[in-house]
Image (cartoon, rainbow, N blue to C red; front, side, top):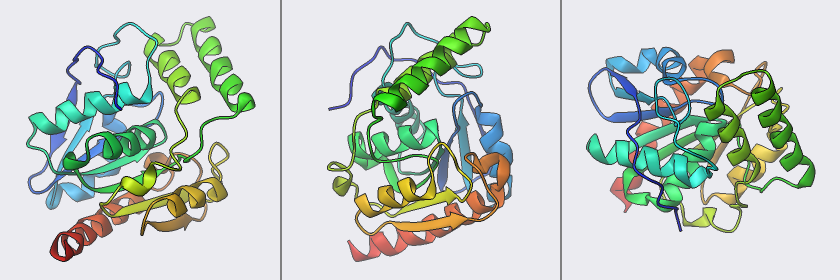
Length: 233
């Protein structure tokens, strides 16, 4: 079950008019990065790009945090903005998007995720995220980013639960993603009923920087797929 953290209001920016697309950025980024990446969509869609907790101009409540906390924050934003969104997430945003679709299914009508996996981190992975958090603190980095790194290290294994996600899903994997290699992201797609998997040549972990056009195309596919899904329901 999703956790129930104290309610916070995420700073967010929106552009365009039409069906709602909620764009969730990666660790250490901000909503502005996703808004720039998805700018071509604003001719047909209303793109809402929040700063996730601890990032940009959003609050940094006391830790520790879980990925459920990120998903709960976004669920409140989507509900306040009218609900029923296409959600696109990269890295941290993808992990939050998957958890959002599981815990708040009525708010998500299609999902695009990149740079995430279905498995919980093993001991080595947990230590890697913990080292990142320590390094951030030692170098005077944002406490919110350190807390987010710790949350990524302790996220649960989703493989058994992902079969509950009914909306269309596209998993978009950068071919050179070292954090979550294409094999891990293909496994994520296989854990999702009817999900589509696509590998992006020449791209690393963060497609919002490396290949934003692929994210744009993925959202356009998701918009079409959700209509077919709704018609078949």
